[in-house]
Length: 455
Length: 113
Image (tube, rainbow over all chains, first blue to last red; front, side, top):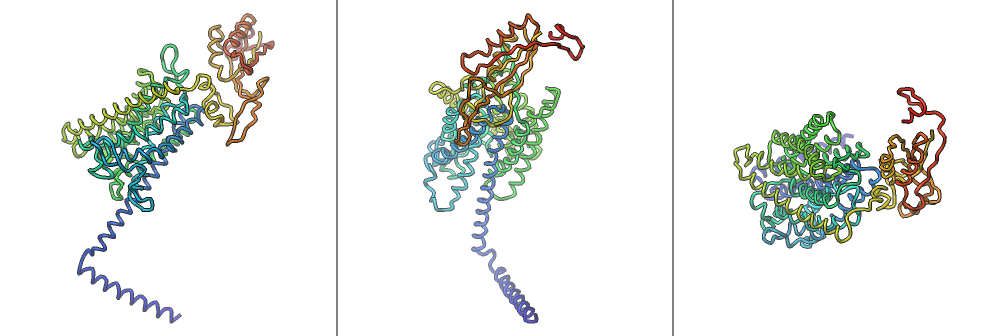
């Protein structure tokens, strides 16, 4: 016992002696070069950890999309929706890795298209290069854009046709626009796109991800035509209610959760901006849900759950572009407007354009993505119209948003009408009535349950 | 007064309803059922293994009608549900003893409407 105390005492004295001498050294040359380097390495590793964590959160958004889409469509088509979601992520991951990533972030040709980094060939597969982290982060973003379309094309699309589409979006359509707006994010000036050179602001992808997906969804829904029974002979739309609103709500909460990786993660840096962007993101989502709820309450006499859920998503999509550059109050306003906008847009697309969009994908992602992009020009603390920045930023935002529309909607029409002409886009009417689960996949999602497949 | 019970394919429900509405038959009730006759079954699979499906999904219609509506109703159901394939379904006509409307307590022909 005495021995232990003695040796501990000696140890303590020794430690104190060493540490005081170390202290003395530091005050002579501060900071030591080795310290700076290790701090830099620590920050780099912190960035990697944060970016990877954010990427995994955005991956989880795929579950969110799957649940939202399954919940807002009919039970007889549940397997088909889930398969489409599973496949557009899987196909997209491969297509983006092999080709899309290079087109988007490779060395630029004229600011329009990338020409290196295909299959990440420039990175040593045994190394722990930042390229891998960046790739996984960007892959989940590309997959998010791809999965938006499955909602608008639900319940009547041939599965094979959808597989073909999902190759093209992540292989080509998404990366090219991504190059224009985000090309320099990996290689710096070597990869710069023409749109970002003009000062286009889209921090986490209101346009790059959501609008591109939304306008492609519009093209697909137009090429497909409405579901059987959606429009009566008097051209008025009929409701086709979703079969599982709890699932849809779960999906929305998962998406909201995942968005904390989507927006703050786009800093790819571990510092205080994460918290600030998380705040703007959350405020906009909440404002969107509230605004959509009140709008549907006023228009439909009751607060509509599916509209409120869509409102939360609309707020999230809207804040995605300006999340890093607006104040919290600005974020609230963006969210409020998005919430109102999504309800009005759903009504407009349903009743006036007469395009059948089962889950409101075009309204949430296309229209609110457009709003989010424009709101950078209005609310940016540095350059926004309402903060004394004049019209310049707004003009650039408009340019970016319209090029996104022309690119995605135009190419989408070509793609979908092309698939329609070559192998057919839509399922047979009898199959659509019986349910795509049996027709396309030979199994039922709810085996053993009595489902009213037609009413 | 007759009660007409019809078993049809689920995907034919909309066509049958349209045909019934054309013949001015608006009151009916619809339930899900499992059943089979000559159809025998079709292939379903779960994780690669065949499932023997011999009770198939059907939709059962029940329509209570006055005598003069019996034949038009049968004609409408046949017109809507027929596809010349085994599994189109069957129609049963049974005698209905009494029919009472709960709200007004009317009986008989008026209650059927």
